[in-house]
Length: 154
Image (cartoon, rainbow, N blue to C red; front, top):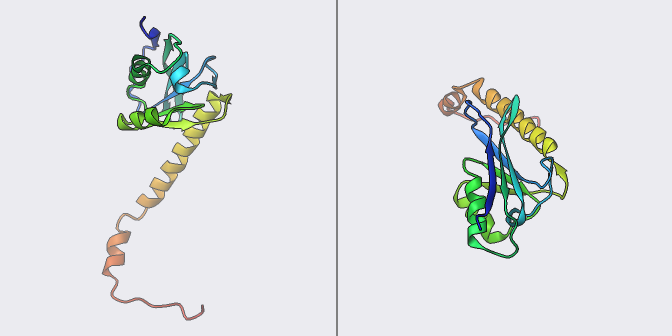
């Protein structure tokens, strides 16, 4: 028995620096344990855009089987994160080794909500980066200071 039933990919000519996967049975909520999920839904995320890139349906098989986990890990190709309800410690470490960070969330968490949070964090990181770039020579200026004065009013 082959562990992957279907692997749908959208026709997408854009490069996505961030791909995020969700363990879901209904395409809309994170509601599955990674090792038992019937489906992984993969989105491409940018600060201003989210696109469904791939859906992989699996044959659900009970128990621990290496081929079952291998097919799920392979389906996360190019993903930076996986959101799921639960994941075993050994598989969590295996995902880290291939560059995927597993994030545990509550049963029924809406995928749309998580995508919005990812985009909000992206915007915050971009703002922090822009603030740091405003004064690019600030460290050189600080290194050239020759003395330090304490504020006597404290």
